[in-house]
Image (cartoon, rainbow, N blue to C red; front, side):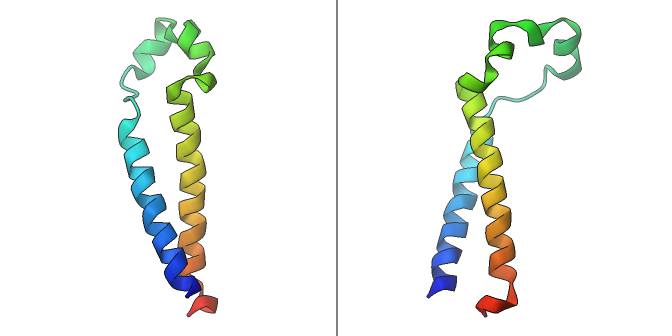
Length: 79
């Protein structure tokens, strides 16, 4: 019962993580953006409060949850 529930949660987290990663903007500005000083813009300084910052934070949290669930589901204690 617990393994089935964890498997369902694992699949849902994987799907949500995929959608969040696809929603993020690309980082193609990369080196050229930092050379021109793009990091000093309003959005660069307040990134944590923007939608992009929230997506990045959500990605980190869901990635950790995904990895933890993968390890727990692979553990021999649940078999």
